[in-house]
Amino acid sequence: MKKLLLAIVAALFSSFALAQAYPAKPIRLTVAFPPGGPTDIIARLLSAHLDSLGQPLVVENVAGAGGSIATARVAKAEPDGYTLLVHSSGFAVNPALSSNAGYDPQKDFRPISIVASQPNFIIVHADFPAKTLGELLTLAKREKLAYASPSSGTTPHLTAENLFRVKAKVDITHVPFKGAGPMMAAMLGGQPPIGSAAGAGPMPHIRSGKLRALAVSSSARLPSLPDVPTLTELGFAGMEDYTWIGVFAPAGTPEAIAQKLNDAVLRAVQGATFRERLDTAGFEATAAPLRQTADYLRSELVKWAQVVKDTGAKVD
Image (cartoon, rainbow, N blue to C red; front, side):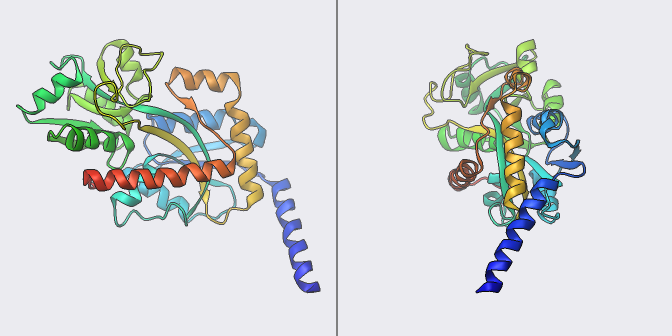
């Protein structure tokens, strides 16, 4: 009994000492997508605003396989708080979409924070003939069309599959890209002219008139785009889908380190500059304490597994 008590005290002291010392060197933020998309935007915001940690945060973009390459890499990293994953809600989708995602979201990771979220948009190139979602769906019944998404396994991909195949029963071919940045470049060239994307990617192009938003998957119209109807308004009930951006640490990361990282994110998102940047990019701050973060992630795993089942979505 005495040895057990000594072991517990030693473990507690070690954890406290680790927390006091952490971080003692730069922290790497491994982003699961290329530069230019929502995930990259949030990662770079974090790297500039987590001042309370007292160490620089280095952003590294590791794209591929819908984010699974970066995810599998971080899952194998040392659980010491120096290698973190920044991923979209695709983190919760990929394990249901693929039998070989390369990671288990609950066993291989410790969620640190779901930093921010934004709804998905159904968008078209400015020259595309459909001016409304209804016109697009009518056109899809007459012609062979294709739509872009940031990648297979992202929530924009599943929002579109659920809308087109399950709800509207039209066959529009999915064209996955390696992130929102490459997708936007292709859509601006009209190849393809239809897309489904989270707000940060298309927002500046919607505002400039180069792309047109036909619908948004939020629960209510966005104040910044009051003329864009929600999918619910258009008759597609239950389609309140959001793309969120989260920070994850490898499983086994000490509680004290996870708490320190979570505290730093909560402090950052309360800052006026951080909030202003989120608003500009069309994000809503969603950072919460560790327990609420873990609960939300579990609910998202259940939700998107059901959508994958309903749509029959596959990795393209």
